[in-house]
Length: 112
Image 1 (cartoon, rainbow, N blue to C red):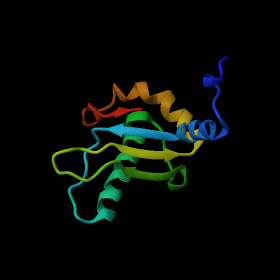
Image 2: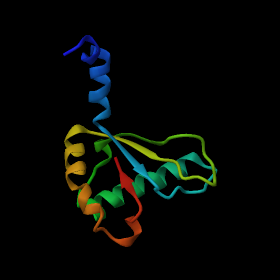
Image 3: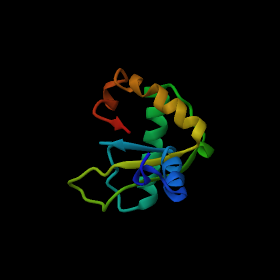
Image 4: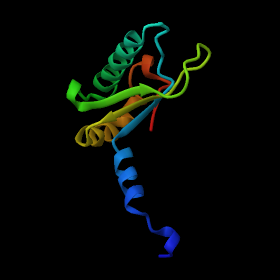
């Protein structure tokens, strides 16, 4: 292995930290001026997609953080970043293929 292939400790910690992130694309965004309303809509949608689309039940303590990336724009749907506990991440990624056969309201949503 060459010197350029070795990760330093900070890079390794960053990689481990990102393993707990879920990115959802094309999730409908509530058009409200109140941030708490938008956040509540995102949380409700994520719970619903996990329960109905992936057959995973989450509790509030399973989610560390959840927020949209980028500036709010009515003409654009921002990606939704969710930081979950490690044990839930394994289940979510194990069941992602089930999302393709989920109800029509989840079609077009992608997870990475």
